[in-house]
Image (cartoon, rainbow, N blue to C red; front, side, top):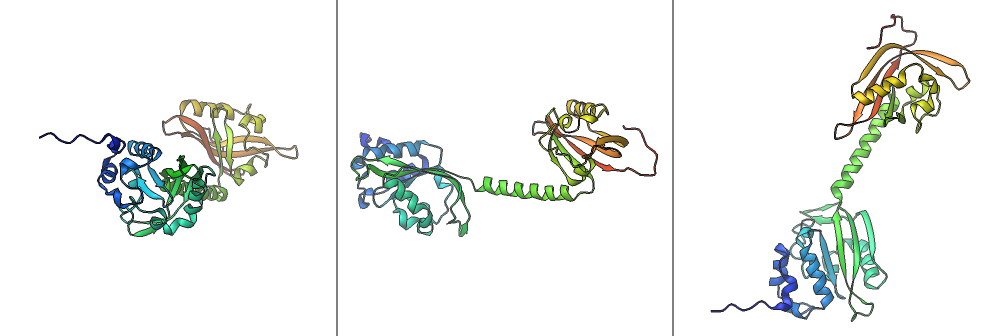
Length: 302
């Protein structure tokens, strides 16, 4: 017996994984949209795009904002909304966040253009609890010449960025903690970036050592030209090129103070190379102590 031929009018629903199958098997005759073969061409085209994409996408269509979404979007919602969100009206589905998304949907549907939000907090209930969820998303108008505003629906192109936002916040907090530790450290510390050894950070102890001259943003040579002849810049160059740390004990360090006087200090220090994820040296961490007046005799640098 010959099998019935596929209806070419439904070709736009082919593929699409789980959500493609759910859209195909749903009885849309019971909805405000009617059967799929009667849907507006712009809606068909957008659904085809959505089902073909590996990027999370969602559609609201018509005055009642009937919903469609793809497999990639499904991963960001819990059992509270999947699969019930398919074919549901927007306000009914998202009432808990309608104060956030409702005005944005209205902007698009009224013909006032697309929206854009980056790392925006849109908390939703999923997997049995309310979660702070962050999204980067855009609401894009789907044209419909029959609609009064020329817009028949909204295409949502989105990415959940919750993990990125949380990671960035944790890293920022850790950086603040380290910065506080550096600020309070009894040793002098500085971070030099690049092969020209440009100051990115210097703690109060380091600033006292160099007479509180403005060093941040300057190279070592720009900030303290008098140390070139003392050999410290050559040592920094060697550490940067070789990737090997250098340490010294009882090293003489002469620096000019703000009032024009010259101060000679004695320091123990280490130049520690800073490497990126590929192992390349990108800078040097300076750490040491001002041991001027220490009774022990000077020792040679090693």
